[in-house]
Length: 354
Image (cartoon, rainbow, N blue to C red; front, side):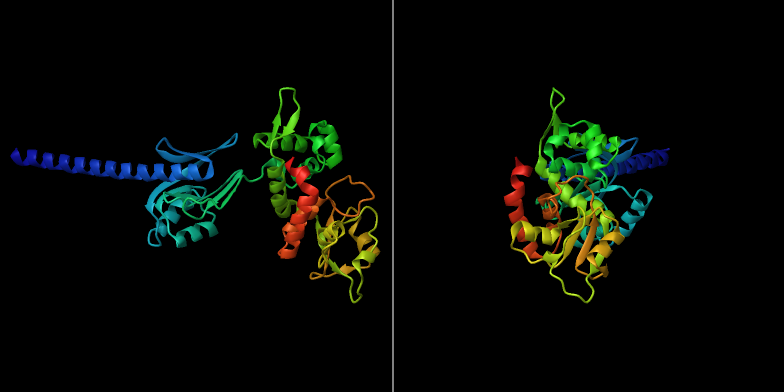
């Protein structure tokens, strides 16, 4: 009887010890979750909250008027030794957001390469999700933060966003008028306007009239997404004059074709010698090749792009400075960046920042 009582007491003691130990670890875990999320929220202005639904951890992300929910995994320090175990857990749910007590440079580089989202209590973080892209590389120092483009910055939406930047007053035209001017469907126009509104980039007044809240952010996003989404789809190829040497200023572009990039910057600023000759045209490619007397050449200096806009005054022989700036800023040449800055100050600042 005494032995049985002693055994029961011992089992109860072990159970109580295990319970307290688990509780202690849970409290410590909850503490570093709280610290990590609080630091992330403070550094980025994006609200992350931790919750468990049916014992399943998840992160709720609030930014602007948008909200997304991501499955979460809470762990302690992440080192090379325990990384394989964590990766096995992630294989089950690849989109999982890791909340770690501590990460190390190798781990953070690995997470970046593998597109793994995480945050730790030192302030390092990576969060790429629907409509959002944030990276914090230094403790407490936010080095990259951008709300990724939504419907206003898809391949088709970029055409409408560009039209609004080029002709700001058209934001309050009828959707049918905007669709006709941009060559897109009514549904695209509607989605672009709603997306800009959801991102607080435009505001609808009580009268129903729209006003711009931050045109600079719209333009910054447009530049970024144009290079990634729209520009590759309008690129027709690179070409050269063959063995002949020709002065690009003597070339008469056919139809409504216009110079873009470096030659456009040269014509606008007068202080750049173009190395790459970019042309935007709505003519058939064969007509352009025959007219300009050029031939395909992957390393050639001539870049042909298809026009993505429908209207421009016929006397203009360059793309609008909005597009010239975007083309220059994505090159590697320092001189191009300097000219782009000049063009922005002289031709764009009043349009973009008013």
